[in-house]
Image 1 (tube, rainbow, N blue to C red):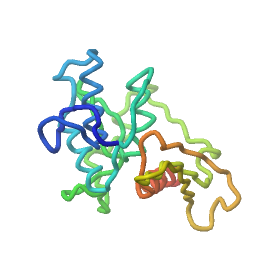
Image 2 (cartoon, rainbow, N blue to C red):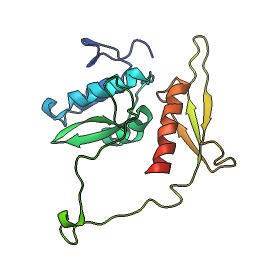
Image 3 (cartoon, helix red, strand yellow):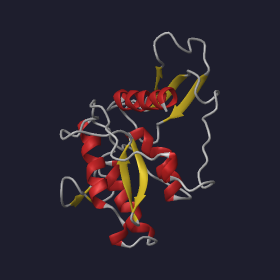
Image 4 (cartoon, rainbow, N blue to C red):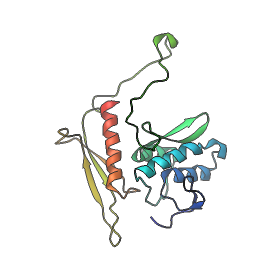
Length: 200
């Protein structure tokens, strides 16, 4: 979408239209008048923009109405490989996986900085629950995004699954037509959703 709303461009500097999800979130957080400027984690939004720029993941759409900014972010951020977060009273976004210095998803082994054992937990203060088998079984994702030719309106569907799995379903549909115009972005989001189901 060209000639978008004028926002503060955290990564590129200045103001103007921006394709970045982090810039849109910054604009919306400031517009809600619920958060004060010092409650917005600008550094995390810049990091989110750099990740999205590296993978060409852009918000290409018209934001019309939403009942809740938090609900909208929770629903849409994973399609940009991000998750909403609050740390020390500041609200922002964070990549769903660690990233390296080139703003790419890191393939390095994750090294824990803290291990919590039974001795560290107050008796009766901790409980755990497991993801149901239904939510972990292999699925075939149908990612619907908007093909955007210059002289026409189109809609395209991308099907993603792990090789040899979910050949006859179940099928799970994700509608990205609100903002996604690139098949690659739909595939990146699908790979994350599939990996989350398999490895979490």
